[in-house]
Length: 478
Image (tube, rainbow, N blue to C red; front, side, top):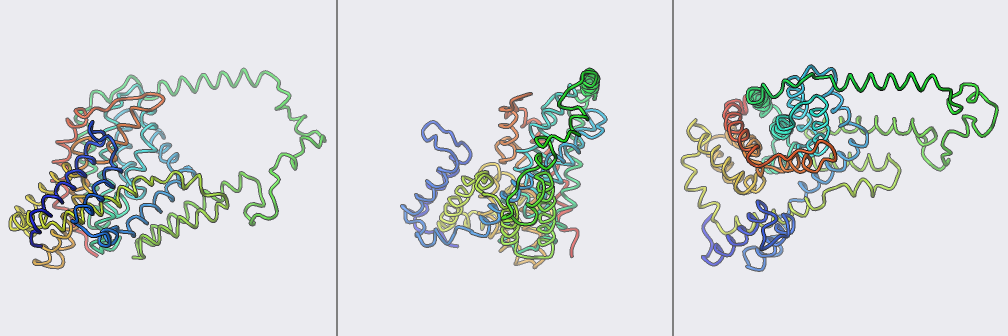
């Protein structure tokens, strides 16, 4: 695409510069309005400056991606209510054999869960639980928080639903879910293992702890002793004789919930059974959603169908669940789509890529290395989703001159590098910031994961994990 007029290039660059500043530094003193409002401001500037027309701005908003994001958050909310993430937490703690074993579990469970439930969701629900596990075992919080954030990013690279940039890539590239998964899965598994080994090497001594289950055993013994004392004291409320009385006020029929006959069949039972049915249904339809992805059905409408099925079967006002959707994220994406589309219309991204394209071919080791470095740097300077929006089309077009297989490889390479690049610094991905903020604001065992604490591990981990994974991209074909 040729460069636009000088005024259009300058004004478009200014509008995109506003977006970049607000995305990276959302609380700058001269404009402390946050990322979401910053994205909308940039979109409005693109229209005011006549960089993009209002009709083109509306057309640039990718509704399938917004629909998939919305539905994924709704499904995640119902899964959380169904106790899915509590089960993941239980899996982390079950028969843990010390700090090193626990760290490995955090890496593996988080990576695999993030591939299916998105990295941000896993970080939100697991951060406080990981802090609690570390505190109970007299272990430092830092290694486990780093393991949680880095593994969430690495694991989310494997599927189109793992993170927002993969959603963009999946929709723009039209790569089927199974092909996407198998194309990146070897790199993800290798990267997860390498990241885990690096964490163990860097924090080996700190992970010793005084005794892995000392505190837990002490609490268990206290509970047993308290139970003995309580059982030795007769209580009228727990007396078997009282429970067997003929008094109508305590009869079983009066102790069950009086449910209206207007409700569907599954409501004609105790509340306990109803909850069990809803939990089971949530798990079943979620598995069905993943299977639908695997067979190639439309991901956006599949997720929306799953979400509405959960809402209907729950048979209650869905507003409390819908309130948990991050609408600010959807607004941010809308503004970002318009901003990036406007910036592309200036021709500047295309001109920069035309300069770099001869050195960034995906059919040579040198070209892949140069392309990976560019993606790595841009993902940390402009964030990974804008990088994918800016570079995706150009990279794919250049790869199309080589072969159709090169196009798929270029998209998968973009997904892998842009996602792992989020581990470089604390500002590299939303998952990192979520872990940092959740840990800092935790009501118990709070910990402040600083920018420099993250950077010391993030830089070597990102570079090594990226390099290890690149040769494995696209090795499994279907």
